Image (cartoon, rainbow over all chains, first blue to last red; front, side, top):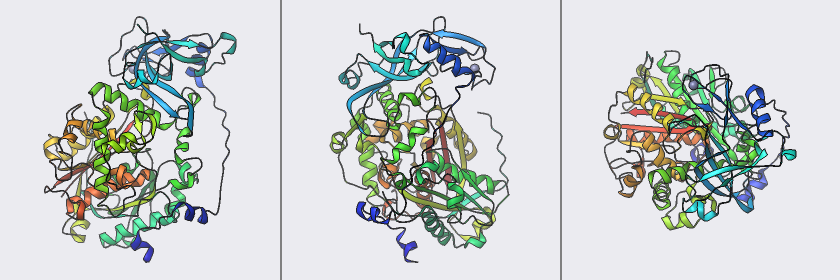
Length: 176
Length: 393
Ligand SMILES: [Zn+2]
């Protein structure tokens, strides 16, 4: 019962390499259907429009859009067009890629609270999206100057758009 | 909050067991599960034949690389020939496992339940176990932006810093405290005597997050034995009662809400407090193990749990309230920052720590005050689940 008493056998790096008996690299390729609401959302992006759905029960505008309200469970049929402008709710500077390799050029990422003409939202729930932020420096993030800054979507040229969240290159800060 | 919870049987914890938490272990997932399970059975004075049901938990299958992970490790968890349930709510899993085990006993379905959580992250070593998290996002609207998991914590941490006027120094104090607490924990991977300066000067990953703001990745397992009142009385003079459980979800669209305060956790905590008859958590909880995969999360969660005023957890930390000899010791185990973060096992380790603290069995980690009521909490999925367990001596 030695093992039980010790509570396991920690390994150093080189010891770990010595006990590896199998290296497996599963390669799964997925083809994902965009669904009812996102298909329309992505078509909108291609035209330079950010679309959402409105819930008359809780008055939220869902972006990305849903065919249902997750809170009220109502069927949503009213589509609204959000402005491609909004305000920065929070922002960070990433020095790492998705797989945690060091980036040559750090990226600024943020959450943008979008304006929707004719609609008002509480401070707790609002249409917010994750995206890259441009026209700001690392310092603007670190000093928190970037909080609440106005931003506007910088779109790819129309012929380069594919119906993707990446049809927006980034949200550019409008200082002033 | 309206709730319909009918409890048939009182539920107690009578044993707990852990493996070491380390970056890389020789043991397979089954062997890790077995070591922790055996130790919990030993403390309870039971053998596997005495166990009616097994409840287990583990985080994404992609870590162990076996897409049938619950079934794969189940024999090490003692599940063969018994009703077995594996549960999963991301990082919240570790505290959700004893919640699911509680249903089994409280409903009268099972009298003695073995509760096991296991994680083997070192298998996904190339390029880094974190890469597994590339596949947790909305595949249409988020994945194309190539997010990494640290982004979302950094975004939330920065929002919290901005809204609550909390500094990186304040937050680093949590890492300093928890890593120091872990020096007294024989299972811990990342115990250390560090300073605020060390945290601030460690590698910058995603501003405002530095390397030492984050818990390490780990291999490890944890287990409990949970039983009905008749069995608790028969097995021990010092059962620890599970008096309240709570768990709620928000949506996985985490960019649509104010991130500085975790409402989903407030809801989960209210559910647990109501069941436990706790009206003033700040006065009634003696020791807490909130989920601390990142240092700011301890502060954020203390506020969500109502154990600190909103935006007030940093001040409590500065004043030493959350130290082991303070008025509200927080993460006396060393937390995920100090003990390590084998995801599901780390959450269950927190419940085990509260069990040992309330029994007075925490050795050098024993909190100074006479702790009668304790709380363990985890959080997970995509910024959306809170899981809470309240225990009493
Ligand atoms: Zn609604």
